[in-house]
Amino acid sequence: MAISLQKGQRVDLTKGNAGLSKLMIGLGWDPVEQKKGGLFGGLLGGAKAANIDCDASVLMLSETDKLMNKSNLIYFGNLRSSCGSVVHTGDNLTGDGDGDDEQIIVDLGRIPANIHKLLFFVNIYDAVNRRQDFGMIQNAFIRVVNGSNNQEMLRYNLSENYAGKTALMVAEIYRHGGEWKFGAIGEGTHDGSLGEVIKRY
Image (tube, rainbow, N blue to C red; front, side):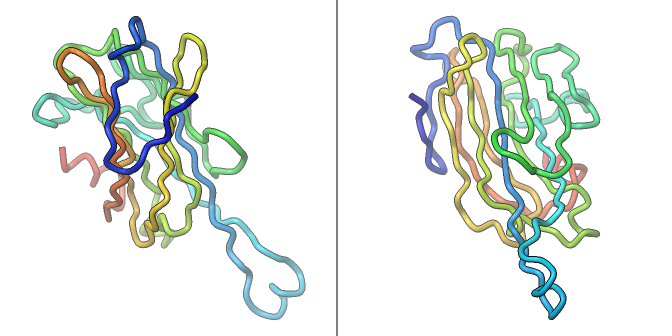
């Protein structure tokens, strides 16, 4: 049975899970249904989901939380790390449908020794120009699945109100005492683009 996490909670991934290496990280979200206003909106149609393009990305960071080169940023424009340890399966443009919207495959055994943290975040593509923010998104989550048996190990539902925020630091997987741990972050930021996010690192 999967462990359900709260914001700020940290749990062991590999400790007690001997041989665990391959993970599937699933991220999902749904657009909030927008009520149409006005006479014709009321007569001709009910609720309509906003078309919001959220993008999941991974930063592969050093021990000092630095992004050492751009190939360590895995996103829709760079789907695979140079070492092959992190692979993004591709961009979902709408967030429609059930289940994961985007998936990232991680092979812990192949992560280079100089990488100490994988930071997972989601931003809204072209958020400023489209005047969109995470107040227009609901049911956001991240889950970790054991790649060898497809069992969901843990899930973190981001239940806060992130209105006004345009990027979300969702979670991290990091080295600790020779093992790997998972931390639920759930922090919203005002970064308007992927470029602004990576300037922090």
